[in-house]
Length: 338
Image 1 (cartoon, rainbow, N blue to C red):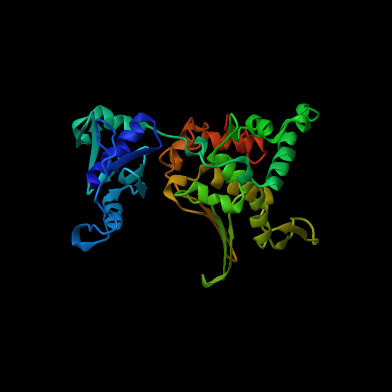
Image 2: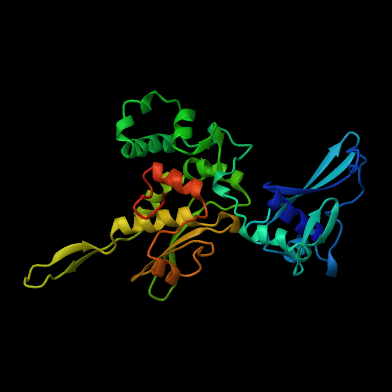
């Protein structure tokens, strides 16, 4: 079963689908419901482990899967739904598998398919959340989005008020033909709607630590990120320090941190986070430092590569999200977003 989950995750990637499915209780050829006695909740993996846990531990990277039990009038059905591989093959117990026709085989026997998976990148931020509607977006966030959009498009200032919300969201690059994307939920979604992004995690955590690295305070910020970034900024204790310029005895007051730099760093953490890794963005404040972290491989490979080429990166992990953030005045184009 673990090998099949690996094969289906990799096959879904090659097919450009968000998930692969393993179904018990339906005939392969006729698709007639036959029912099944298989119980994934009672079946054990090796070492008497819970089956779901045992399979999850065997998958690398652990892309995640769901088990659904359907009680149909014609028979009981068990559905395994596994997230597609992304930029690398999914292995089970160290070996990657693939579906070729109706057969399962080792991916290593098909190097051309393996190469395709390694170079395949699905933009998670552009995916449509099928169950989401405009009611899952925060009205105040939409109002703020309109305000920021006007700043970036002053020539349309008189035209924008005549757009209904769906028209505005389409033009701002947050929805696709009115369908709610992961980007729309991330930037404008209600806090309780963040569960629609599961298994991805949409959260920014601010942590305050003392000089002994002991935690003093914390704050969790869930969507809408368009509004929550200001909440995070207000949590940061940006102390006023005094510096003595050369040639005078009168000190100048300065903020400990330039808010423009905080804006750039935090917004770029949102834009570059790999949400498939199910982690949170962290803002850690110490007496002497402000550390911002997000999850995801550095796409150029290393900083030296970026410095040596002296040019913006040609690819981005979430181009749909980045473009939407540009339209909402969250990030700028000078850094090479376009």
